[in-house]
Image (cartoon, rainbow, N blue to C red; front, side):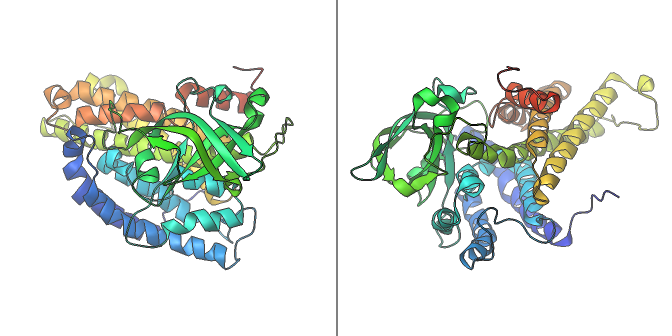
Amino acid sequence: MISFEIPKEVLAENRVFAQIATDIMRPNALYYDEHEHERPSEFINAIWPIVRDRYREKWEQMVSGQANAQDDSRQDGPDTSILSFILMIEMMSWGDAGQYLCRPGRRLGGTAVEAVGTIEQKIRFLKRFTEGDQPAWGAMAITEPDAGSDNSAMRTTAVLDEETNEWVLNGEKIFITSGSLSLKESNGFCVVWATVDPSAGRAGIKSFVVEAGTPGVAVSPSMDKYGIRASDTVIVSFSDARIPYDNILGSPEVQQKKTSKGFQGAMKTFDASRPAVAASAVGIARAALEYTQEKLAEAGIEVDYTKPRHQLTAVERDLIDMEAQYKSAWLLTLKATAAMMHGEGNRLEASMCKAHAGTAVTKLTLKAVELLGPLGYSRDFLVEKWMRDAKINDIYEGTRQINLLIVARTILGYSRRELK
């Protein structure tokens, strides 16, 4: 029997996140949308102690040797911390997706370290997220001006200087979430994808941990954006940036075999991060749906679920469709989350939930703007902001088209070359 009951300890944690989302994030959402380059310090200071304490126990387990070298997240039963994490993201994105993206912690950089780093690397790089009053951020840099969905076109290089035993990075990365926070304003780090052999294509791509304050790393001012405007999004350039040899994640060897752990190992990051993006999309969708239902109810429009569809008004049918999009996206996200909780592979489910949630939240928020008219289109209210915030979930962590390709290849058994 399938149970959708949430453990009591997870519910207790989520109530704390709900309070932050309700009391801090939602009231300040319009302000930080209008003041794009200001840091949401009230939210950051409120969430950091919680983030720090959540990471500390897991880090201490690694130090004490209770985790094995392959996967430090396994335990006797399902890992409920993963469910708590997904519920937190959904709740905070309901509060404000832009502020949520400023949340301190491991973020995508830490996810990459957890996915393919050694135990020694996990202990060394993740310790900074477990102590101190000053927040720390992790980030990940993949996208380049000429390499978006096609990672094989990546031009950022990493060359080993054998005399100093250091990697020398050169290139440019764009659209780096928390790029400034991780590299300039904290003791954080950014995981950078670069090629050690451009002729090898994807097999030559490796990931490297670049720590804050590394010489040769230049961070641009925060970029102006359409949505998620509170998020710290920058361009990062590398000019003979030297990092220690041991900061490479995975083997430096270039292997052309399908079993190569270089690029494929780094791709595990997306299996964990795509359900998180889907959860963020669901949080925005819920915010827009609830507000639309509330305002239409004030006007006397409520769905009578006892009537067949053909007897409902056009607006009532729209509301039902919005609710269906929201609930189906959330159920797919929970399915991908459940696989992670039980230590199972979830590449198919991760891409399915990410693709559907991105589409659903885009359609749902657009319909909310349409149904609410002046309330939806005015910048005095949050509806049009939710529409702008929603679109990014259809783009980053792999566009909808890329994720649909992954779904099709997985189900049909086609290779990347056979189905493009």
